[in-house]
Image (cartoon, rainbow, N blue to C red; front, side):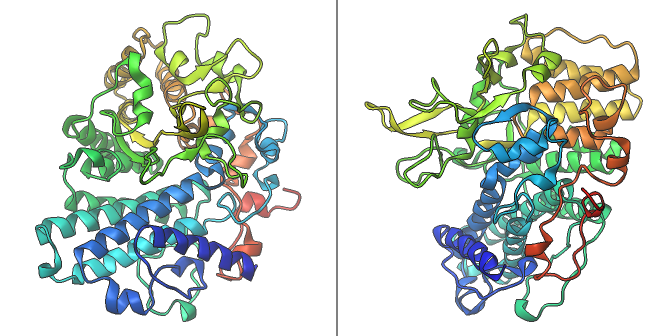
Length: 511
């Protein structure tokens, strides 16, 4: 276990080094991991450049947390039955209907599926930024010290909020840490808080972020990959939906829709959303191909067997020479969500390939670039991982309106998304019918974007017997015991924090 932890810490600081932070550490407790030794305190956090490097490190760590072990797509898509088989990783079969949706059978490893350590590394980096940056002298900023400091702090609050929001969605009951430890070795263990505390912490951080950030971007290269006020309001609307504070969720969505300067991509060019810096994107992870500073994902396994997170969805003809090593789309679900006999819905073409075959693909992330174009070798998938976008928030606005009893507003925002897709306006027969349709629309719109499972859990539709696309196997007893949350690998985590407890469903005998 100690060796596992040391390896995890080594990977973390390799990332920090690449982000130009260049610091050392001897931390042992996962909730306190961060670059906090002598170079940090005495030498590092003294200039604007250092602060920007520290912030880049936080973004890099968040990207690694979401992409490691394909976590973002496993947590939000595989669990929602969007894929029928996983030839690239047979161990995921247990989280399908045939495996009885048993998250516990996915093998424990150093990754993030059963281990939230990497997200706490992000939080620890943000805590350092929030602690150190206010003390950097104004004279050591090359730009406006007040505006620059506010931007850096606002982004750090946003990233920390995203982590607490995501940890609470996935595992629940987070350990709340908001201070930068000066003595992590001797820091006292901390017990888990409630789900409500996790979401409350995200709300608190997002409100601070909103107060510090502005809408828009001064640099086009930072569109969507840098958090701004629109990003914070968008995430806030989603946190409020978990808290069932529908008026606040609606108001936060309004702030994005009315002030964020975002516009829906046209139905004919939906693929542009995932190519980065799109007019619809609100927040995304930078993963585009660049010959000089490449963050792109491998298109197929390299000489060491490493493979990019997007490549699990692709094979020939999208990646030259790659076949049979991909996740296969669940045709039953696609046929349930879409009218596949029609070409009316633009999302069918932009999302799927080969629906008439036995191995259909999900192709949202299929912008493949070859390092050697003439030979079509060394492929990279040059797409960004979009975490928040306008269509998502329009549907949040529609769902909140239903919960507030405003069917007219719900229809307005639902139909904005449908109109872009090329489908006709929806005419509901009842409020519950409209809610089901909004959730189906989220399934259609956000297929393969790491979200629909959490939408089904949050809305209570995951075990609603009247909802047609309910996920079989999530019975009321499992939901009551929070069996929709993932178990923790206490074999690794408990030595770091002896106050941790297992999630109730997975703590039961025989689960």
